[in-house]
Length: 216
Image (cartoon, rainbow, N blue to C red):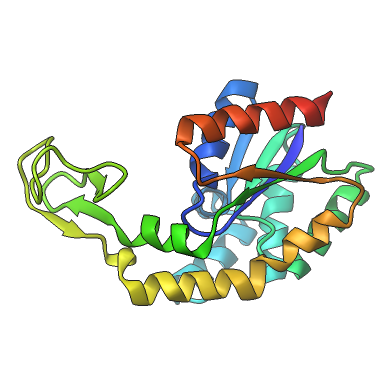
């Protein structure tokens, strides 16, 4: 099973990737985790990634692809890629990496979510100053407003949940990642769509159904 999970910020694709990976006993390869593993491994590739991260630079498409190639494609028979590819260039590099091994993707699952729903999810997130427990004003509210149900600490808006940052993330997604939907749609039914606006449990059920269809 070789899958890519796509979706806008707030769609929950990382959560779903983790659940599906557990259910089907495959590797969940998120870009952030792959970078951390590469750095921890101390290889020349990992040192190069570390230099980018330490300087606060975006890791280039080519370097990101090299890390995915080394840490995932070269090691795993089955995987879910979460956060890669993020651009058309990365998608083309992924195609090349798979082609040279005479492999191909089995499917691309797109978790569809409207801009309005994405904003609502991303701007309502709270975190406890004491224990770090996460909440959401609408979807996972604390038992008492402003108070952590776990340790009684004060809740504050997460630093990445301001409207300014959320709009920036969504704009970047639309510019760089959303074109991948059409890229994969043109490839013989490779793209499968799941409605990410439903409850997390329903999204998981729908995703399982889609993957069972993909795998026949």
